[in-house]
Image (tube, rainbow, N blue to C red):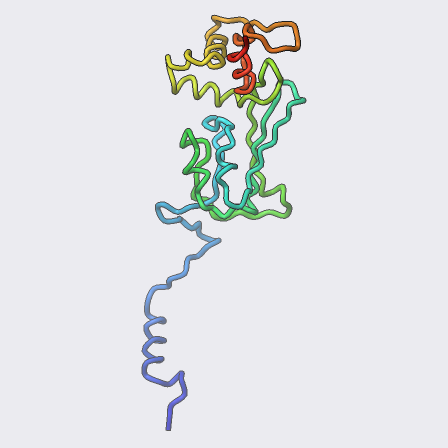
Length: 203
């Protein structure tokens, strides 16, 4: 006669082993859980290191980071809004961040909330606009990071030269024509690539 499953020697051995051995489960939430080294938790912006370039939003697979430019505010602002309820914690944002510090994966694994707003993280950056056409050039922090990274080579680009000169207090403002047409003298202003090409090819 075949014994019931709970009376078979193999099962009894497993039961006795489980009773006498230490438990495998943690005591979370009563005791905080410490993730292992290299654990990929929720990504977090570092407001001081983030340059607002939006590279994280470009490479995000679930598209959970929105880049919102407000050109009507004074000064113009860019908001990077991360929706953690849609994030898959893949780490692509950290991997492709130009500064390697703007957004980092943390050890935080416990994200709770009662509304979509509870899962939003936001960082704001001042925008730099083209002084000829008024379109978005780049966040100020991005241009500043670029000029510092290039060093003396930044002065080979008129826009970077003007920006750096203003930061150093060497230039008050650029020279812009009063007319609607783009002319060569407009090269001494902060310009987007489109306007830069027009002034470079002006005859």
